[in-house]
Image (cartoon, rainbow, N blue to C red; front, side, top):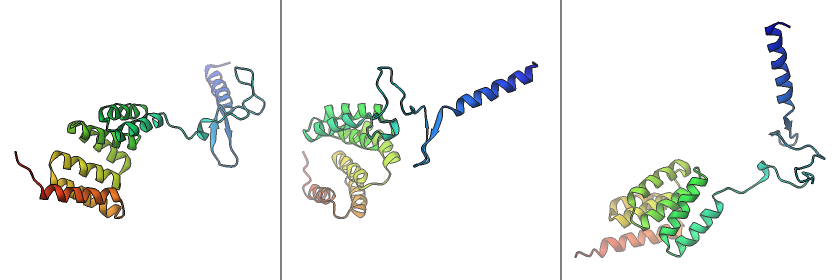
Length: 183
């Protein structure tokens, strides 16, 4: 056998083997690789019946960390919340909610440099949401940048005029402007 013939035979055999690794789900048109056939056994001797494939699972690695972080944030443990939100961003770097929570936690511990980085990432992932603008406005309020706070609160209000949190923050901003204290 000549070398080109052997190469063609090997390539053909490889294609046949790779084609056998995929099955098509006729109902959804989704191609799944390495899905067990009916009657196949696991390494533990039981069948695959009843086991979910990856596409059926609605769990993300960051879910537990985000849930715990929100609990810590509501309890005003902002350092713990920040650490858990940071963990969630490491587990799922494209989780915009985790990045927004991290930014809010950094605001509360006055790490505005880190908050700005997290807000930037959250915006890329979530876009212009009322939560984003509301949180960013609150960040500017904490920094004493009242014009920027007002701009962001108004953007949040335009997107969600019936949101009570946005309305409360606008009231808080107006009381901050009226009650300036100098030391």
